[in-house]
Length: 248
Length: 248
DNA sequence: CGCTAGCTTGAGAGAGTTCAAGAATCGTGG
DNA sequence: CCACGATTCTTGAACTCTCTCAAGCTAGCG
Image (cartoon, rainbow over all chains, first blue to last red; front, top):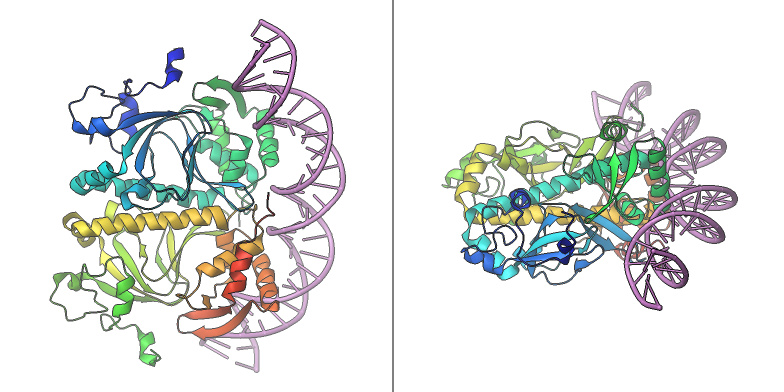
């Protein structure tokens, strides 16, 4: 856990079955991170990749040539407008898939950037496509995963963006989405990232966060190898998150 | 086309193959609207349904017991916040599927409301599920359709909502999405609906629309059986839509 | 013809932005 | 281990877009 060597990102050297259980693909292929010595041929072409914060995994418009499965850390799928401002379209956490466009030979729809330190599996597109062609169960799961991403997008649209709802409430909701598992730890993003997700200026995010910390709802909780953390009063955040623009 | 009888919504009586071609399901089952006398057993359980504006097709939380395929008109998928304000999460136009949750026995994620007059096909959930279980091609298409919905949601998130982008630009973008096919006709929604999509007050939508009409970019174009229409200067709208919050 | 729901328009208030400058933090290299 | 440069964060103050409330208007429908 605290071993310095952990930062070195060895390829196919770890044993993290708990991470793999959350992956959509688990039990369908030998995960290299879990089972480096597997006889399963699929293990041969799945690579383990590590990324530092702010590393770009792939760019918008690029040809999608691999599918990625996030084992740990947080990534953002982002688009930039003509003014150069980022607009974050989705947040990926452990177990999420990225670049599923590969299954359709489409170009990437976003730029994918690591927010924290990130560990992921890489599955080359040809193999992935062949895999989905032959395996029934995987297609079922892909559809389910795609639907779940859609539900998340719907949630963002209805609860997270839009000036209808005050920024403080939206930020509270976002923080709850950024919890590490079920703990009271919360991934601490850059101010720019909060802004990119909620459509607010980083200064506004800053002011609100500081208010929350003044109220004791939020505390800075140092940094781990995976990035910076908040410690939050989940109860209080939930209460805040369910506040509305005043009832009818 | 102009026959008064068209409004009467006869069940399984029409012949509109062009509509069916746009449907994700086309060529996989005999569409009742297209082929009422088909021998195909599937035709027996697909119903044709007509809805008046503001009719509710299904409600959030309801058990999903059928899948719908929109043949013509516009529907909105909406959620209401505790204050009773609507937040529109997606717009469905001809060819789109609704209530795919049925495939997973989930509860409906939205309330579906007709915006214009609407024609759609109804496929009961049990049959649909059995269908997807046995037919390979349909699963492929469902995944593709789900991905395309996701792309649309991404577009909304990145280009349509958020105070970062001035309301006028966002409204222009929305209007372009509401074009009838590739013509210069644009579905004319209620002010409340523009508000629900863009997260702005109806009054603001009203002011901007009137500005656009003053500039000659937009004209009211009467109403058809499918609802009210604008006629828009697509070029000008596109220009407006690509304006940004000032370059970097 | 009158009613209702939707649209229009105005004026004041407020949430959030922008600009700017100073403080903290991080990573780097000596 | 400390110093330094570069981000990132913080805070203030003026400004602006959009909201809110309120009232009058219009159009569609029985």
